[in-house]
Image 1 (cartoon, one colour):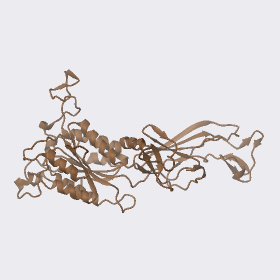
Image 2 (tube, one colour):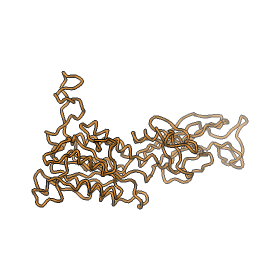
Image 3 (spheres, helix red, strand yellow):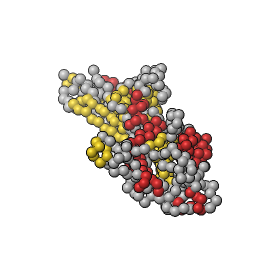
Length: 433
């Protein structure tokens, strides 16, 4: 891109201007560097870097340079009342909010059943006691950290990934059952809110955390109306417009997290049977995929054995993962089965990172006289990849087309962005000879 010939159109945002370059003719100067930054709608930092020196007026050894037009002055100067004066705006940058229609819509469908806080189901949150003898595996003389509820671990992981990827996706949350469910047989154990507790929206992590029970809440109760939770989430995702165009939707997906078999069967004949196994979960996930909504399945300490309903939840969740179109590449375990918070965190981060698009909209017009440099994963990429570069095998970035509206991160740069959710656009002033 030839930034030297690109003119700065008006931007509906704050413009941060900084002097840069050295005209080589000023008699007085003060060197400095100025940085400004802003966070875009995807959580990407747009950092503006300008550097150089300021001069009060264009001069030569013999005094001021007279002019009739700017063409008579140095590139860093303007013609002001017949005298070349330093133009403090000749090279600057803008901290801009980036808009994109590539952020995926992600609905967390979370198991809030009573078993998630049952003391009998507490687990080794930090994996320091694999042999379950009450002492740390690394130091048999030191007591292991106390086990915690599965809900505490799930809440803490949702908070972590929400914070990490808040600006990179449109997030929402659906509970099953709702907070109004009660610990008793019958329909009141199987209540599900529709629409979901937290509708999908950009930068929505704080709303998600406010809309679900707290990490230390042990009052969670009710059955496992998983099918109803998924169905409500699907209806919501299908009704979402594109945040930019109002037409075509961005990628939509569900991350379904549960600690057991679905019950609250919609086929039950009476109230007492409402907590029987619900065979409709897998068909509902199958129908969602047919409508363009994929489902990732995460299990919370799922045993590969029949439960008290005579159902093997491991087999059911394997089937659900395949039906959702996003199974693990594993011959026996198709869903993400986790046995502690560490594995739960790894599963969620891996899923979300893997769906983050590496095609990102450039934040507005590039400021005059600057060059674009991309930073991601601690590495700096000052120039786009050459024409014809293979993004699958080379590392860096490139424009997706001649309009230079979007960039695509390639190779290790894409991987680093998906892992961290962070990158920066840096507009650098060119050096002056």
